[in-house]
Image (tube, rainbow, N blue to C red):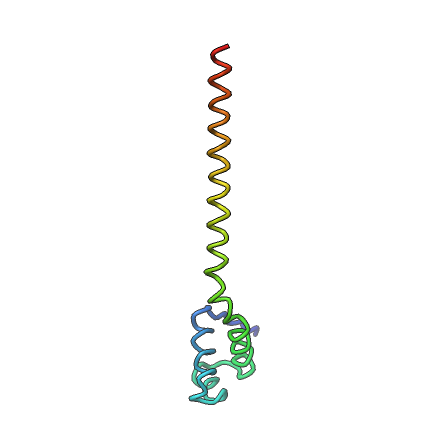
Length: 93
């Protein structure tokens, strides 16, 4: 009989990783509580710590994206204005 592979949500992975980082309980204790392998907890903890800085960098990236969109919008408005002027001029002829 084949066992199906369990999947875990990002929230549950983060919860377990945070508990592992706190070190209130050992990895073995957490593994028993959540019924998962201890090495999986270690992987989640490592991944969590490696990606922790992205939480604080996301604001900078979002600001950059917003500025880029605003600039594109201004350019499009300028093009629309120029095309409107050109269109009106052609109507006069």
